[in-house]
Each structure stands twice: as structure tokens, then as C-alpha cells.
Length: 497
Ligand SMILES: Nc1ncnc2c1ncn2[C@@H]1O[C@H](COP(=O)(O)OP(=O)(O)OP(=O)(O)O)[C@@H](O)[C@H]1O
Ligand SMILES: [Mg+2]
Image 1 (cartoon, rainbow, N blue to C red):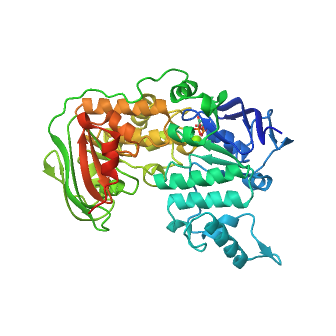
Image 2 (cartoon, rainbow, N blue to C red):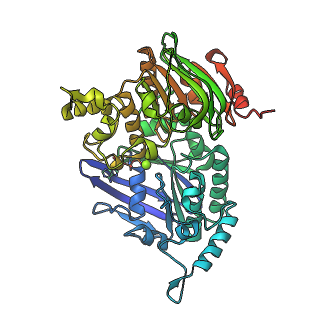
């Protein structure tokens, strides 16, 4: 049998949205098969149908090992050998690791859950996976990457034949990506098929054997990675050529608008870092994950206490005890973790976009729904957010579109200084370009932008200057004329003497 999994003619309609329109997918045993497509193309939806989280519209069929397959829920899917690691990890934070691994398929003895056996078995699986955590640790105390590995362990332990990974690398470090790829290669050798979803081109070309592309709920085609290159793949995904992936708009650079001096965090995760950004300038902050970049901007923003540091906005010193103190001065921080600090998932698009800029939406001193509606609609259009209306619940939007809402919400407040932490994570190529252009327009209007990113090409593409951090320290900076991948990498991995 050539395929372990075949999905044929699958459709899914949500109120106001055709998420999938007669699409297909064929997966071979032992291959890593990428699903690619713009935000909202239908990738996660297709996989949720496979897992029995959503039911497909009538018609169409799924064959697993050549036999009809229809899972009513994730447990049934797992029992049949299909497991999924989700885009938005939703671990039950107070649950210990071993319980999480065996949830829904507890090891029992005389009808009772055999805790001891579960802990022992979990320990064995964790060791096998090269992870260093205790099976009794609660998930709250694990890093995102560790939680992800626990999900992988779970998938391995049910002897899955097909494992779906929906943007598994969105929140993990380079080293952990290598670890993950190691696991993927071993699974492949055992004949396990991996369905891999990611917006990072480099990953697709390094780990995937074949690619299936979807656009706006339609199936576009499947090809071997070896026959494709980046430009070809973009054309399949977007339906047109994108030649200029990193557009840089010219802006006049003026006086210093924002300055932070000698920032030291009370927890010592930032050890005395200064930065400044001028009107019209885009400053990049580069470094490896864990270099203290998010920690720096969160410290500046009053989210974590500082033991020293001074902050100036337009030359005026600002005492920051809480985020409100600095937001008031026209500074915005667009955080990396949209779930925790960025979004209200059960609120509408409108609620979320209007959240910060409420003052701008008053009419005679009262909150005006119609003003909010108009403003949200404007941003939905500007950022090309895919949603049937501004009254849609944000939790129903695709991952990348949720990220765009976070950006819209802060921009509506018209801040003078915009700090963005990994703003394009999980965002497709076309939408990334929209965001770069938007940032370019903002600095043309006389604003200042600070952008943290782990993607060096992105930083080199749109920044005027890149400052690099390493282990909580400032390790140097590079001007646009002198940009080189190598320079930035060297600074990022500079070992402090
Ligand atoms: N529960 C839901 N209710 C309503 N609409 C939904 C729901 N789930 C998904 N959609 C819509 O279906 C479409 C496809 O979404 P999906 O999450 O599958 O996209 P995706 O390809 O995974 O995108 P991304 O790359 O951004 O993760 C989107 O327009 C989305 O808003
Ligand atoms: Mg998705």
C-alpha cells in the first residue's frame, strides 16, 4: 500500500467561512509531509478533522491503512494510531507530566489507576527522549519546548503511525529545533509518517520530503521538496510572484525618541543594557532565543521589576512601575506570547482591537460601539485579517490571523514608539510583507520602531540598525551599511570573558 493516510474530497464550512473546499491529502509511511499555505488556508482545520476535533461536512472520505477511518474525538484517533501536537498548546497546567502522558488511557490495576506504574513508564519514556524532567513535575514548571516534547512522547507512546505537528517550532530555541528534528528522523526510520506544518521555509527544505499546498480552502497541489525552491513554493501558496520579500521604505531619521539606560532586572536576566531609537528609525534586536531580549523589553515596560535603569520618552524621564505608566507616554509593546498577554480569545475581533485604544473610541465621553466597529474594520482591511466579520470570536481565527489582531490592537492606539517582540512568528510570507510595509509607513510618519526577531534575514531586510544581545548583556551593534549575517551571528554567540 502506497499511502498510510488518504483524505479525499474533504470540505468544512463554518458560519460565514468555507474553511475547506473538497481538498485532498495523501501521506506515505515514513515520510515527512509538509502542509503549506497562507494564514487561514485551512491547514489546522484539515488536521482537526483528522483528529476528530471537528467533523467534516457530509461527503468525502478518509482512508487509514487503506481502510475507512472516522475518528469521533482525539482519543479515538489516538487509539487508531493518529496523534497531533497542536499549534496552540493547551496543557492543563496543574497536571503532573505522567498524568498528562496517560490522560484518557490510564494504566489500571484492579480497576484503579496504577500511579506507580504510570510514573515508572513515564520516566522510561522521558529518558528515552533525552529530556531531563521528573515525571512528577507539573506542566506549569516546564518550558514550552519541554511541554512540546511531552506531547511528542505521548504520540510515540501510543505507537502512532501518523503524527501531526502544527507549527512545532514556533516557540522553541534553535537547539531545541535540532533536538526535535532528531526525533523526527528517528520516527521516520521507524516508518512513522509526520505531517508537518510550518511557515518557516528553511525548515520545510531541511526536514520535509513532500509538500502539499492549500490556498483559501482549496487544494493547490503536492510535490517533492527536491523539485521545489522557495520562489516556486511561494507562488503555489500565494498564487503570484513575491520578488521583494523584505521591502524597505525610505524614512527620514530624526532625534532620539526613546531611550533606556543601564537596564538591570531584579532577577538579573538583563545585566545592564542601554538602547535608543530615533524618530523614523527601525531598530532591530537580534540574538539567540534566551539572550534576554524579551526580558529587556518586558523590564522596560514595567512587567518585571528593575533593580536599576532609566527610561526617557522624547527626552522626558518616565518612572515606570506598571505598563500603564509607559503606555500613557505613547509607547506600545506587542508581545510574543499572544495567548498570555496579547489576546482575549473568547472576545470578538472588535473587542480585542478596541481594547487598548478605548480613549480614541469615545464619543461625548462615552465608548462608541460604532466608532470601534469602524476602527476595527479599517485595521482588518489594512492588515488583511481573514475573518467573516469584526464580530467573529478571536479564538475561531487561524493562528496567524490572531497574531495580526494583536498588532492591530496596538496600532489603533497610535503609539509613537512601537516595540514588537517576534511579530511575524507564525505569519505567512505575504502577510509578513504586509507587516514590514506597515512598519515602514509608521516610521515614515515619524514614529520609531524596535523589533525583536530571531530571523536574521528579516532584521537585515527592514532595520536601519541592529543591536545584538547575548546572555542578558549588550554584545554590540551593526549599522545597515555594515549588515552581514556573519557579524550578527558572531555577536549573538559572543561568549563573555
Ligand atoms: N471554530 C471555528 N469557527 C469559525 N471559523 C473557523 C473555526 N476554525 C477555523 N475557522 C476558519 O477557517 C479558516 C481556516 O482556518 P485554519 O485555522 O485551518 O487556518 P490555517 O491554515 O491553520 O492558518 P494559520 O497558518 O494561520 O494557522 C479560517 O478562515 C478560520 O478563521
Ligand atoms: Mg493553523
